Image (cartoon, rainbow, N blue to C red; front, side, top):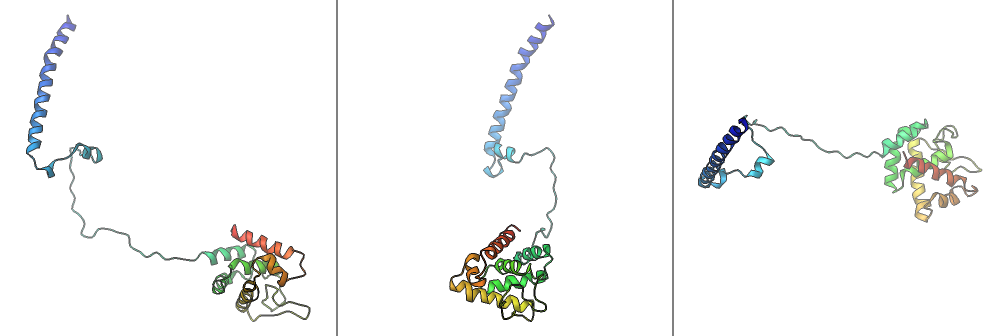
Length: 202
């Protein structure tokens, strides 16, 4: 009996509820048709930015915050080279920037002059006293060429590598070795190549 009463109420109220909903939608459609298009909100905008029942208003600040600044390009090569030489406690480490700038002046790979110094003098740790000659430059049976400073040595050796080797077709450590240290059976070029590779991985 109770089930029949509930079923009766459902079948009585359902059509009334449905009719009321349809009537409301019809009125809403007519009302929307009278509104200017600029005030209508599409259904998709409710999905994109749903509106809640509460609206919060705030004044806009006079000056909108922004980020300003200037991007400054920096050359990381001197820092990488300095870190590499510091790893070996090289007295040449403070001259990393000078090595890079001088290499750029003579269109050299800055790692080449460093690798040669590492092969010749363990990065300037084993050089004739007061010569500042880390590269074995000008060392022969009659004596040793000395420089007044590391700066002068970097300049002369870089210029010499460009003019006496690279410009004359000695481009790789193996080719440079044939003129730089012609009596080497290959170990000089092997060492320079190894140190170049080590710096590439730095």
